[in-house]
Length: 524
Image 1 (tube, rainbow, N blue to C red):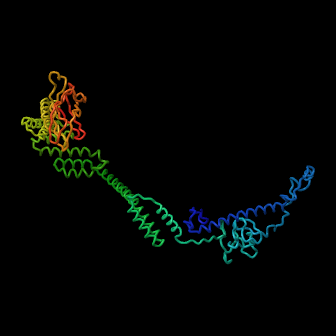
Image 2: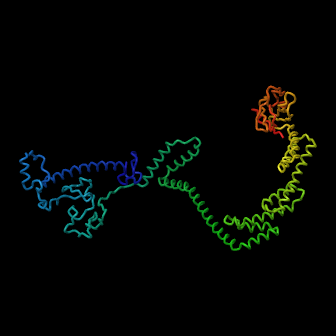
């Protein structure tokens, strides 16, 4: 229901207007009365208009209307007052024709003499501010004179003049409102929504806490509702205020940084020669800390391109100073440092020659370590893996070196004879090459398996897959006996031979077990 006082849309069950606190029941009754009065006023207005038109001769009385023949119609046209001529002159109407009517100051409708209220809009004349004159808006002979085209009007006591300018209405609607009425209605609606809300079980503790707070607020005065609402609004606005403050601070820092960078760019461009000479002098004197501090002052994005040669020069001098402090027999460290110097200054032949020298020495050093392990024939899987890693480094420098390749092949074959795998199953193997006699076109591989778990493992030769150098994946030849046990108890070992129909060199063998997992071993 729309409030007739302020126009706010309320619910049907609201007793008071949420916005202004007006009594909605009285307002609804007033609306019905106003509608009935409007209908009666319109009916009386139409009756008055008909009566006026009949009095002026515009309309004939309905009871006197007769059916006239054509001859009478012809004669009526020739008479004065017929068609085309007025039957009554308007100037003959007396000037005081409406003198006894009461003109409504609210809507301008003419009411009968003695009317207490306007039949059109229903305004009660006794509640209107009294105008000077006879009710028609005309000033009386004893009243104040008209000023500036305005009709003077008196207040309710008839003592002082009031301003009746454009938009003025003498009708004063008095509405008594109760303080906090709208807040109470809002609180009831919030309480109803709260009671109907359905929360998840995870938020029960928070729900009970909020409900206790609500019950505590209900015991207080209505003014506390507004205070609680203000606190909630402040707490809700804190994250946005914090975010806005952070944003403003970042903008401020950015503005300050831009100004500082502009000053540094101006200073570097003005003293460019002196700054470069100072940094180079400090680098030549091995005062690298002071040189980096002086250079870091201008290490900003606008000067990145200009200071890059100075940064490279400083790093080159510092790296070469480190090379001088490293003993010559530390081939790997010297090779790493000279490789960095070659990257900083590719045009230096000295750096390149030193890099090649220490690369050769380092590769030979790794080869000697791997060869000593191979000749010692130590039965240690960890040492065997270290030897393989050493020879891999040598081959990384010189991949076509024949001695390095042969030693790697020997070390890998020796490493394959050690049990390796996971905590459940370990595997060792050896490549026997091509088979003899009827098996010359097949690859023969000897397999050793050891159960290192606490469960019984069942072995199936179909779990093995051989990947060859030509990119094929093959299963074993099931026409041949393998010799492998099908059941391994914890700690037990088994050995067997697998044949694969291929002439290509093997690259790796993969064993996939549902319980033990996957084991991969690579061939040389």
